[in-house]
Amino acid sequence: MPRIPASLAAISTAALFCVAPVPSAADAANDLLLQVEAHCIQPGRAFKDFLVPPTGWDAVPAGEVRDHFAMAALTISAWYGMDRRGEQDQTETTAEIQKSIAKEIERDIEDFNKREGAVFRHGASGSMLVVETDGRGWFHMTCTLWPSAGNEALQQHILNRWTLPIPRAKTSPFGDVRETSVHIRRNGVPAKLKADVYRVPVEVGPVPLYLELTLLPL
Amino acid sequence: MTRLFAGLVVLLPAIATAQTPLDVITFVETHCVRSAPAGAFYDLPDGWKRADRSATRFWLPSIAVEEGIDYAAFITHQIEVSKEVDAERGWPLTVEAYEDQLSDERSYTRSDWQRLYVHRDSNTHLFIGAGEDTDNPDDWFPPRCYLWHPDADNPLAAAITARWDVPFGDRLVTGLGQATFAWNKVVVEGGEMTLESRVIRPYTDFAEGLAPVILKLELR
Image 1 (cartoon, rainbow over the protein chains, first blue to last red):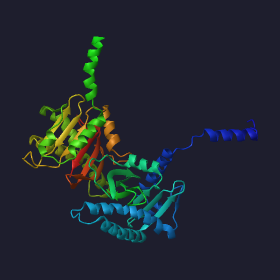
Image 2 (cartoon, each protein chain N blue to C red):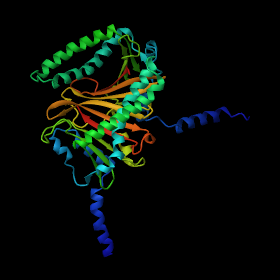
Image 3 (cartoon, each protein chain N blue to C red):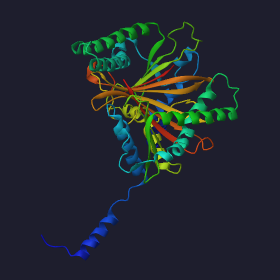
Image 4 (cartoon, rainbow over the protein chains, first blue to last red):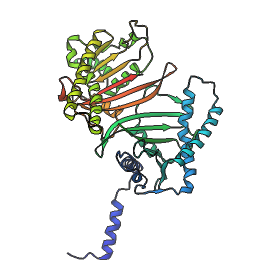
């Protein structure tokens, strides 16, 4: 085996780096979404395993959870506002609904603190992932992924992958949602997977879009 | 040259009216997800013709198999979680559910509120049930529509999958096939309803006439 001079090796290594394709934003979005799906869509898995962050993600320290979750809750609550708007009694003003939303956020945070869960942050992209359950293990386990506001590639990827072209879909000043349920089998366990994609106007919440994956017993 | 020109003139309208699979799907979405008198759902544009009743046995399976898959999923689960259900009896039960459904569909079809249309140029099939609980064609009854093409290699199957299916490969597999279910809130005539959409993918060798991919849209 001939020895390769160190200088030549250095040049070859540099050349390798030059030719190696730089991952595009779309590739990174695809990888991230697949990683979240692989982490969260695991019926039968022990819940403590869901609380171990996937590679490249860090658990947000307990002291910061409230701040991060408040951001998510604000967006999550858009659905609540949208629902209120859709009720028969439409006399409620937007301001009144927003007031109710504020209360709902507080309730969401309290609920999260009572439940088992964790918040992860993706180091490279700043995306957030909330994993939580109501104490029944993987049954009713929910993962909420929200890309950072500027990560349009991931937002678009979630839309392409998880939304359906619903004609006359319900929309409101508070946003819209696409709900999908799929019967699945993974790890030899049959389950129902609910995948909801929420889109929220900028004036309602700081996060324009998020994906919520819920596992349910079939 | 004149002949060539004449040929072009004949060809042009054909090109102009040629519908892509996506055109057909979007037409069905617009036609079926709305509020209208029951009779209006059977008022289809030129190009669609009502299928001959004698062909019923070839298209009923593509509608009835949905119920079979649903039931098969339920039975599969029961077998796994309960010792009370005999595994040997599980699979025949699912076929029985499918056959019951075939028989139900057959009797519904006689009521004339369920009709199959075929697209003349492409042989695409569209089944519409829009007045099952009423005798008055002016009443609105939330419709259900099934769209499919009987040929396995027709591009409509891929177009339905790309537009309405979810790209997650581990669906519950049953002996009859698999399906994706989705429920979404929609607004029809100012009121809120649920649109149930399903992409049904039966095993085509299960029964004669089964389409490989069927799209169902139903308002509830």
